[in-house]
Image (tube, rainbow, N blue to C red; front, side, top):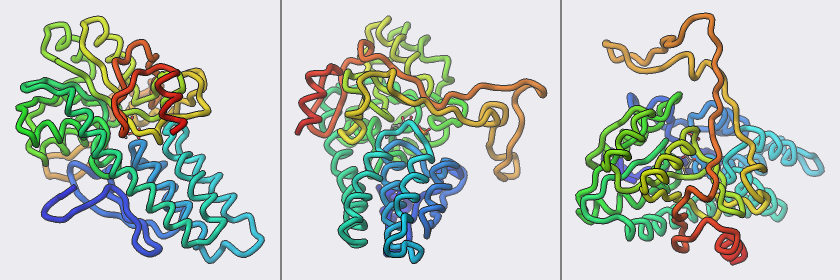
Length: 348
Ligand code: MRU
């Protein structure tokens, strides 16, 4: 995607350096950071400098490749095995991370060059998939549609056009006169900060709405469809995604609003039979108790927004049962969230 006249991916590798857009600074500052070791990649994932299932996966793949070419990876050592375990421990929910480390780890046993190629291939495939998701998803969007999205599933979250936002970019490109409602997505504000920033850059009409406002808009007929991304999809069509997704799905069903999940096959987990197999990440309570933004002088600053002395709970994801999902927009077409349809695409 183009930003300020330059083409960027959310993460990319050049030689033995991995570059990525530092998402914690957006939308206030655009900065590219560089990781030279797999450990630095792990910190970037953990601290959510890079986030979103696909971006975490691409970064995980590059991290694994860096481990193979690391001078500490001496013949006969278990360096890459340990590196893989460390990368896999950064964040538990997004399937794409494990998909990527597995692929690059097996490729690395042939040569460091094949590890690099495998990591690059994952990012390139993501770019292709996101484009295909955009094309299929766009078929669902009619002229003048008002679309709700949650969290950030745009090009920052998934190389190169995003998942949920890819059909939205395509529909806007075709002049369909769409409007996007972006849930702010507390506590980290991926909707208010990242989705809003992406939509603003692309000139797509939108508004940020409080997390608790979607039911109000759906009840009054102001939303025509919902499109969200996914962090992991089980074989029965249950979906793990950013906390708050479940609530939107239930409300959408109540008011007859179609609820679509956009995700590539690399997000489907053959090892998860249903949502009971998902691991839901719990993050630090300070993400709820404190908020970050710019002060009147333009400096990024942190303030406490909750009663001093109280603790918080901070589940980062929730699981939406398949029965609330109208369809899943994949790179091979739109499928039903059921075992037969998912079994078929996982076999291909
Ligand atoms: O905690 P995050 O910001 O990594 O969570 C991101 C989401 O939940 C996205 O909706 C999901 O990863 C899909 S984007 C490809």
